[in-house]
Image 1 (cartoon, rainbow, N blue to C red):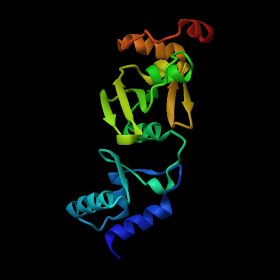
Image 2 (image 1 turned 90 degrees about the horizontal axis):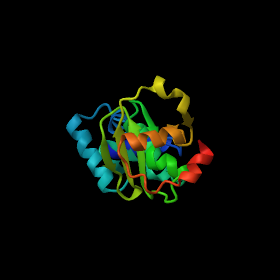
Image 3 (image 1 turned 180 degrees about the vertical axis):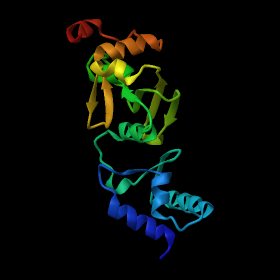
Amino acid sequence: MQPARRLMQNLARLANSEHCLFTSHDLRALLPDLSQSAFKTLLSRVVQEELLVRLCRGLYLYEQVAPSNGLLLFHAAARLRADGFNYISLETALSEAGVISQVPMNWISIMSSGRSSVISCGPWGTIDFVHTRQRPEELAAQLHYDARCKLWRASVSLALRDMRATHRNLDLIDWSAVDELV
């Protein structure tokens, strides 16, 4: 059987709405008999044939089972930085708490122990990773796990502190809403 067909059959069997994002390492494990160069060629071909979607560098979407719940960027952020400390904060957390009146469309802000970077995920949006030196144990009381997003989420007070620390624009904040929540 051809490698592309084997890859897609394995994905059809393994993928579901909870697990539709795969790193190139994940995909490589499905075809261990291919050489590295043959695997790279295969990956390019399946993306070109639209069997897989390249969400961003090193991350692929099996679109046939992808949920349409608007959480794809959060799940992508969790997969991209799975080895570090990350949490939803800044404008994203404040907007969802109702403290910022404008909802950032297709843009999420994540505080990360990794380096700062802005990652474009094409038509799905953009992930803004902002570096933090804060340690999880220092913030534990101000974080809660959001199982829907597969990431930790900052409290309003922590998100405001992060906004000040990263010198973000505070003009859109509804301070009366902050007073009610904090």
